[in-house]
Amino acid sequence: MLSQQPHQLIETEEALRARISLPIPLIAEKKSERLFDHDRSFIALSPLLCLTTRGPDGNADVSIHGGKHGFVQVVNEKTLLVPLFADRRLRNPQEDIPTHSEVGLIFMIPGVTETLRINGSGTIIDKHELPDTFFSEEQPDAVLQVEIAENYFQCPKALLRSRLWKPDVQVAPSSLVHLEETSGPLTAFDDDCLSFLEHACFTFLGTCNGKKEADISPRGDPPGAFKLLNRKVLLIGDRPGNRLVDSHRNVLQHPRAALVFLIPGISLVLTVQGRVRLTTDGDILELLAIQGKKPVLGVWIDVETVFLSHSQALERAQVWDTRTYIDPDALPSLAEKITSWLKATGKENLPIPPIEMLQAMLSEEALKKELY
Image (tube, rainbow, N blue to C red; front, side):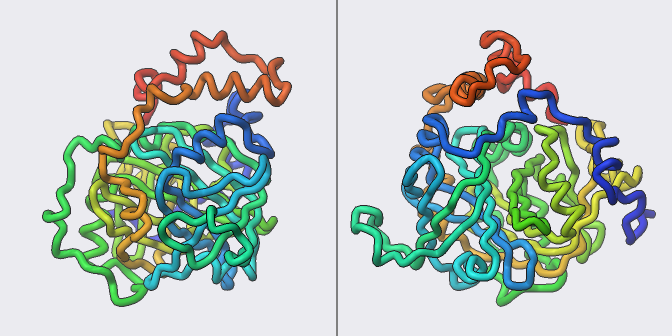
């Protein structure tokens, strides 16, 4: 029987690095402090982002934001303007920013497996000071100005594992028609939240630390891979990725996180907040194994709040309408983005293989062999 308390915890960065080795130099150095052409192009095509902020209580919040392609405006290489639409069921970012300015964003393009991560600081600005051309058909309730501290393209493995854009079995909304928004935050999973989790294949993990930094990380697995030990304990496997361990470091410093879960084709989202521990407990890793392969470690979340809510952002972004999807082959490959970035930052001396070999190493076919 599985213990109801976590054992074999990772509590130091040294112990963390004993489980997750340092990334190769190309990955370790891939962060930039400003936007380049590929970053701008990605943002211009993105209708969806997830945002981590830090609430007045000091803990991470997550929220989804969407609109037409390019709804976020790039002011310059260091600054973004993000329109925010109030959600009556969720605490909105504009409530967090005045107290804590740290933000983490992840941009997505439906149909594309790469994501763009941006961390920095945020300020709520007066929307009336912006030109009318900033707004689309719908005026936002507030505008978030983001000053960029770092940005980089994220490894596609989470989206490949989840098959978020191309699910093996499309979950028809009618099969979950009984699910309803919760009347307010719950302190444990009820039956509806449990049913949603069983079908979820993708989540955003939002964390923050004591250095006024926030981060958001994508996590993806086949439906049914996110586990409940009981209605107060959520378990997630930590699979192979870029090995930058930003979220892990944050958890070691400030063991609180927020997550929002998605199901393809569904406009409901599941939000969870709680205390996080990292564990190497063998029984937990066995429970989280996929295709006979255990995760590197387990993410143990003691649930403090959980609720289902309707996401207007997903609908505004038309995330599940495949007719709006962009052909990934029409975009620069990850290898092309990396080589272009190396030239722009003067880091061409990093030990990297020729472009043809890099293309092969970073192709979906190659990455799919190393998902677990």
